[in-house]
Length: 402
Image 1: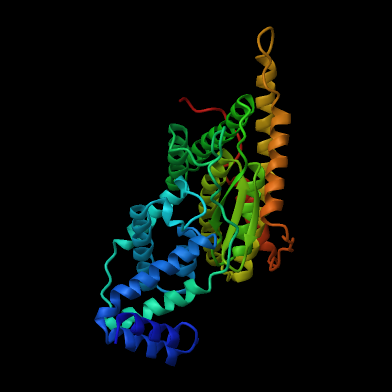
Image 2: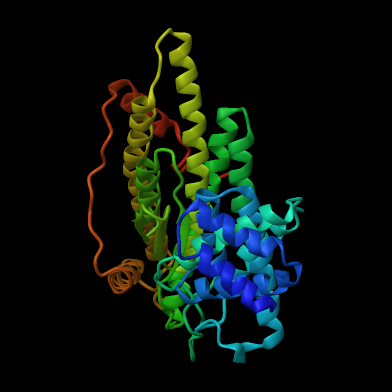
């Protein structure tokens, strides 16, 4: 019997019949034929390439497999992703597996996948075959997503992430220190400086693009929204996105939000959302500890209400901070005018970018719906979540020395 026919028989038994007996039959066929291993791996790489054609990216597939399956499946997926990438690189662009060349975000995701692939597995042949078939079942049934990679533009700059700039490195380092320190005043100063740098970076990018008459269009990225309490986390991400002139569309079934915006703003959303989520989780842990110390048992409704209130209040605070930053930048622009060449007016530039983002969202997601937040029923949780949001470090403060 050929190795191809072994794999075909195993797939016929296991991939299209969602039962344990069918899975065991397919795994037994593969485990009994070591010569079929290469063909099994080749089919796996084809499933991975099929996911790319349906709009998925490495981080998306890793996140979904981690949620639906086990660590063994995740390591197997990581090896297949790395192998598929290396194979495509050897074959060159004529392979035609993707509609457009992957950008720096894709490359960064591959670096993380390589770390997963480096972990060894010690499964026996039957267990390995079972894991492969379970993984292939999942990959086979992935739905089509909105593509994020766009063709290379001509005559203008590309809206792709820049290499890690000194500015972004400073922002990342400041937020990391703010999350790690045990001193609230230090965390406040560090987070305030990071927020200040992010806002200035975004405004500067918008003005530079306008002066250069850049033809850049908004891009998009996907950010995981993981359980538990994913509704409140999605609301938090939406608040961060809106404050940074982006829009977020939540896919509850697949566990992520797609954030649409210009690149500098997308970078700010990714960094600030991660930091605020860490702050919210830390604040929630402390609030629960205080409640237990007082003899009151906290429940799922407390945690849900806490995080929902945190997200709601943070949205208000971020909106106020964003407006203040724009007003400051506009005042600075007016103050530096005069006899020389006129400064680019900031407000029309930002308004035009807002329109471009909204149009891009409409093109990508013509059928989005708005839903109400449910599960907020614990008054103590709501109050403490709002208080924690008031303490979160998002507001402007006096500048730190450079």
